[in-house]
Length: 167
Image (cartoon, rainbow, N blue to C red; front, side, top):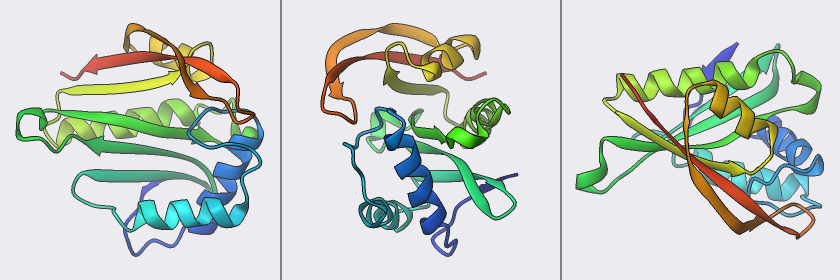
């Protein structure tokens, strides 16, 4: 089940566990290893305190356990209100292969469309499983930026930038 998060939704412990698992298993999502549960929870508390308006977050649940998440971040400049970024798509390693990443992506895309967004943008580590997902789901590759971000072990990796027009 995929649910939208609200400021009143207390999923921080589960989201923190998901973030730690994701970083521990090599995903380049903005954090270096080792990431403590306390640091992950602090980051998620900050994120969830800004929910609503230009930031929407969903969690995929298996029972009460958070096994996936995605963020939709709407541009705030007056000339950019037609676009948004997809960010922090994560699926717990134990929940992969069930189509959760695709379902989370579709949820965010539909919410964007419902909000009047016509253009989505994202970046992902070049060569990652996510890169293949975006290509299959109709996203257009803009190009690759070398040494864009450090992986969890501190090594620089390229990122691939994608966009998708929503109909």
